[in-house]
Amino acid sequence: MTNPSLLILPGDGIGPEVMAEVRRVIDWFGAKRGINFDVSEDLVGGCAYDMHGVPLHDDTMAKAQEVDAVLLGAVGGPQYDNLDFSVKPERGLLRLRKEMDLYANLRPAQCFDALADFSSLKKDVVAGLDIMIVRELTSGVYFGEPRGIFEEGNERVGINTQRYTESEIDRVARSAFELAMRRGKKLCSMEKANVMESGVLWREVVTRVGADYPEVELSHMYADAGAMQLTRWPKQFDVIVTDNLFGDLLSDLAAMLTGSLGMLPSASLGAPMANGRPKALYEPVHGSAPDIAGQGKANPIACILSFAMALRYSFDMGDEATRVEQAVEAVLADGVRTADLLGQEGVQPVSTTQMGDAVLAKLDASL
Ligand code: NAD
Ligand code: IPM
Ligand code: MN
Image (cartoon, rainbow, N blue to C red; front, side, top):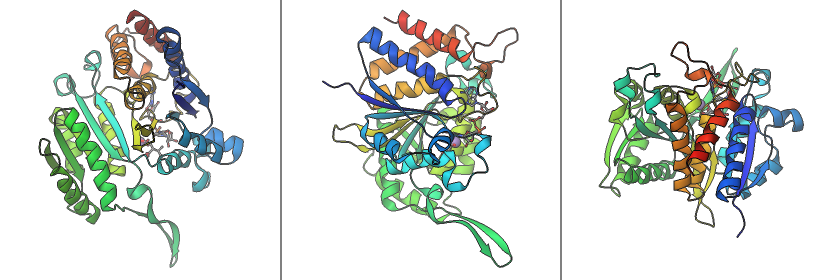
């Protein structure tokens, strides 16, 4: 049997720093569990632009289409902020999502007990929190046409278009209902049907799909009220399904419920490949964190947990995914903290590598 294949794209800023810790976890699985991956590495984002003049080379795109799963660190940085829009680092990531047709972006927000005190919200609001945001990832205002900056009379106008077809809403809604069936059987759909036609269609299609999932309790919320409810009492939610832009905002908000953006993993899934597994890209929700890049301060947990999601969703290794998640939980329970997780006085932060060391030690202890 051939080994499962992984394409690793560390990217920019803290991307390579957090991905180095994931590489050690992957190596651990080879050495200690006999689970070997064929790993190749390539460039995406600003580093690809520096090398090739584009944020994603066609060869890299082709490789991403062939492998069983892609792992990505982060892209972007201030030195690229003034580049032409077509070659910005973020465009490399958007191209991967679009061409791999990764329409369902799973962004779980789970509050580990050890971090319940750390959230900016009261402990009882977040303790035990376990929600899943399903963000549509290949359409909406991120990709709708027309778009651009145009001359209009004696001034310019910036245009983006929110656009959703019925089939685009239908397929992401089905992903969300399927997830809800395996979880708490509750789904809340968020849009702004009160002001946007795309929201009216979204609500209608999600309701229609819901008829195929009578066991799932479906509710609808305007996304602005949803943001408020997420901070008021987030535990009312199980699965949330929403569009590309609202999902971007709501998942950053949900990240802070868990203590830090450095904690949140994600899986971007598309249609099943010939082997029955979905096309997939795994990445932390956070970005390249230019403010701390190169200082060994980044929290690698979001990226490590993204690899755990790959084990679960691409490689059918749910038990091994749980092993990684429990190792992370145990490290946090011991009080090991990167700088982003500090709240208590007198606790010294560990470096990115030391956090990796601690996770590996717990993985060893799990054998
Ligand atoms: P960011 O997520 O990079 O950083 C926001 C804040 O969170 C910063 O203070 C940062 O230090 C902190 N942070 C983020 N990840 C952390 C980690 N693992 N450990 C500790 N602290 C962490 O968002 P931003 O500053 O808005 O964007 C910076 C760049 O990243 C931009 O170019 C943006 O486009 C890009 N970005 C990329 C992705 C991605 O690659 N998926 C996601 C978001 C932003
Ligand atoms: C994310 C990021 C991306 C997005 C950017 C970097 C393209 O913010 O993954 O959440 O807006 O989708
Ligand atoms: Mn985002």
